[in-house]
Length: 216
Image (cartoon, rainbow, N blue to C red; front, side):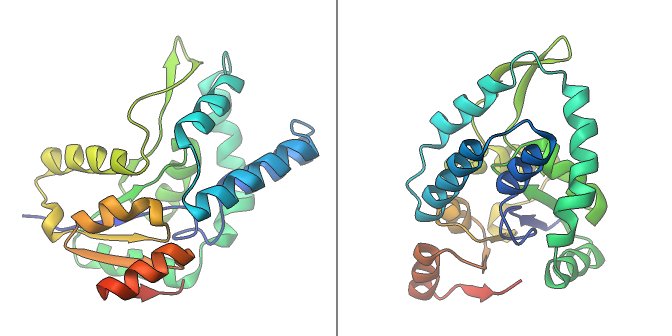
């Protein structure tokens, strides 16, 4: 039976929040205002504190993309990830991925971010599978809705269990690297939880449970 190595994206593989990086990029291109950036920073702060209404935020973000061509999003995110995201992937993250790859483990990013942020990172790191919060597409354009469940909280377990059935691995044998208290359901479900750059609530929980803590 293969072993799975699962990696969160934001503040884990990437040292910062990709959502903030993307809105800063939009500021450069004139597509976002200072208010948009401030709103995103508030969402990131709420996410860190574990009080974000992820469903409401996702619905709001998805609605702004209604009618946008998916191909255009793919193209622009390839350029953005190369320029703005990959410099935030540190040596420790790369080493962890390489170590699991050398062991023959199944590698997957499991993130609440979109596939358009996470797939280019996965490809550059040699990670074969991406579980992300998917935007609904019809006729090549975004409908303004997300595919349920979001890859967030318990939704991550739903998606990982689906991947496990497809590839024959057990969550009880899997390792999951994450920074966020919102990932407590999946961290609790895997055999080897590893806490990376934890937010304050997850740091306390990791100490209580005796989980390994790393700084990437």
